[in-house]
Image 1 (cartoon, rainbow, N blue to C red):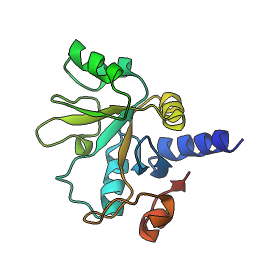
Image 2: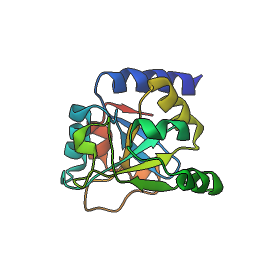
Image 3: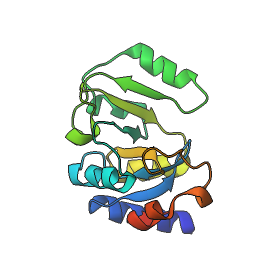
Image 4: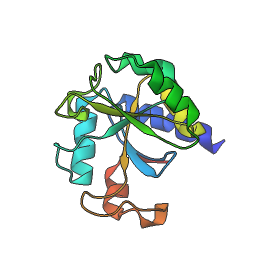
Length: 160
């Protein structure tokens, strides 16, 4: 089955510090292990992006949030459960993540994924993954795969 093969290859790449181009709940994203600073650096280089700009991370389950932030706000969980579309929540005190994925002020954007592929990938990896749009910095994010810049496709380690 293609999804199983893609999951296996993504896991191999992510565990070895690589980058992937993958479908998310919202757009085609570039991702890596969010706890690996060298992998995060690769994404900045691929996107030609200023490291001052932060990226978000994806988690599979709400229960995992407290592994990566030092705040517990029950209202946030109620909010997340009440929305029917992808939503990113900004948390003020990130932890256990690559320093270069955390904003200068210590915050991090986290989205709990609904997409089955992403959810399975994150659960099997056992760590959050970075999510950033698949465009070169300064250019609009592509709406569909065929609009992704060839540079992005050639620079990531695996394309789902």
